[in-house]
Length: 260
Image (cartoon, rainbow, N blue to C red; front, side, top):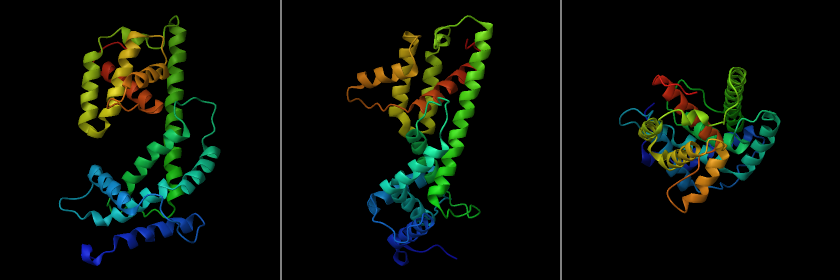
């Protein structure tokens, strides 16, 4: 079947069909009014689709646009977020500090789910229950964070057995890392140009940790927020900051430098 032309295609009706399917799956027979206007949802969906880069040359975004726009509307609703919060509370209970709140997990999951829906691959199964699909994606992220934190704690325990305790950011002071930090920022910016405000905050926080080896990550991020003063700086979440710092460590180690 050929793709529909714009004159034969009613985008709003197509969006409403997706919303109706997800509302029925959630036990709501009548779709509620969107909290996000359809034109805004469509603009955001187009940005996600083209950023995803899965469309073939000269491909028609209408293949996935209604689904992605409907997901923007559905996942932005207060009622959806309340249902998600209730389900997440049962799933994400742990005594382990993974450096991420349920809001952090929801934010990262939101982007991942939109990216999945923006993939036009016909072999992908359609999403019948978007809320449960999103919760499943959030659980995978959550368990990944748990495993990362467990691995970090195991590494710290091994280190304590071998050495006397040292300040949490002492590894930074044993390296000339500013060149590595600049290379890290440039690589991230090349892959995700829209992340530059967060990368600025990350770089400023790392420099603060260099100067204050006893500080925690939250101390550095809080000081960056105080000094931002309206500049083009956006604080990354604690989980994002920790992931980026770990990747910087690995980058330095790959360069045959000791990180300890």
